[in-house]
Amino acid sequence: GAVVSQHPSWVICKSGTSVKIECRSLDFQATTMFWYRQFPKQSLMLMATSNEGSKATYEQGVEKDKFLINHASLTLSTLTVTSAHPEDSSFYICSAYSLYNEQFFGPGTRLTVL
Amino acid sequence: AQKVTQAQTEISVVEKEDVTLDCVYETRDTTYYLFWYKQPPSGELVFLIRRNSFDEQNEISGRYSWNFQKSTSSFNFTITASQVVDSAVYFCALSEPLNDYKLSFGAGTTVTVRA
Image 1 (cartoon, chains in turn orange, cyan):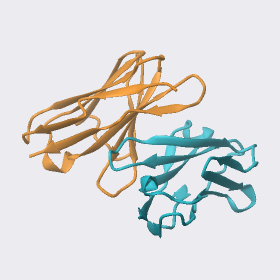
Image 2 (image 1 turned 90 degrees about the horizontal axis):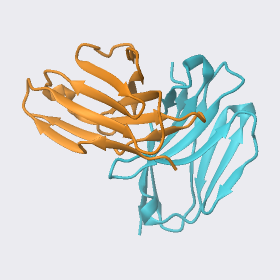
Image 3 (image 1 turned 90 degrees about the vertical axis):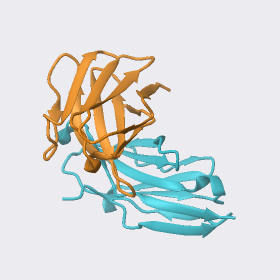
Image 4 (image 1 turned 45 degrees about the vertical axis):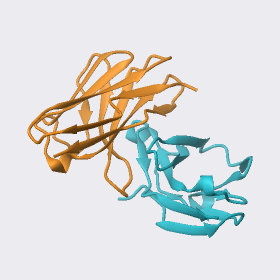
């Protein structure tokens, strides 16, 4: 099956700093990628849809100025959490959408903001 | 409104018991896809199955089986002869054209298999 990687797998940062998370499709091209957030013991919540070459589409309630998404190529999307605060601590998961209507998930990035 | 309902929050069984996870969905589309994912403690989502709305055949894969009933909008998942390695959170999800094929996840069911 297709492989999606995320980097870093975990990150700890100080409050007020920005953190960038990368999502890569390793063996296929993905015009669309998705970013999810998962709080402890909760389900995955879609944050935004990332489209190559255009602006991301954010779900209701997600601050686009806080969660910057850049889909610079067909294999890479990045999520930058700007001015992170402790309430942004979460598990962030990306997925890449293949041509065959399948989503392949990355392993996730655990963000802890002190 | 919740599109996917997993009514069972937690299920605990002893090894070798069967366990069935319920999933009820809601959609106005006639074409849609249903999924089950496993999330072990490591956090990585493991794809288990995808079923399109036109295929109501039940499926068996090893100890896993799925029962799709359009009449009741349910897509239940059974683990037969459970093992400790089956301990995880299991998510049911729905993908529909009206929602640009985005995945809507249920709340998840935590399965604990005790030795």
